[in-house]
Length: 133
Image (tube, rainbow, N blue to C red):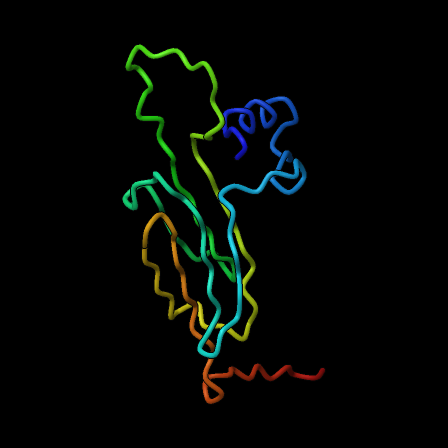
């Protein structure tokens, strides 16, 4: 697991364009797959309180943000080895038109955030007529 503080330092050095993809860092890890009734996103965030996670829709994007807190901060400890990452995280996924961003369910089970986006019903497909001038 990557140390999120390292990401913050790299972000400060490289500026606002230092996105996770550019650094080769993707935290938290996630799987995205299509099933019979929609699109499923599963994100591993063990040790994160569900109250510290936000799932939002921005345009056609699904944005998950949150905070993994270090419970030992200000407890007078000195790390000898630190492999777990802590800090803020954001993952943004572009959602194809065939999924209905008005129908999303999110639940937290055993350290995994599970998000399901319903498929657009055939009758719900919106037709946008373009006027020819």
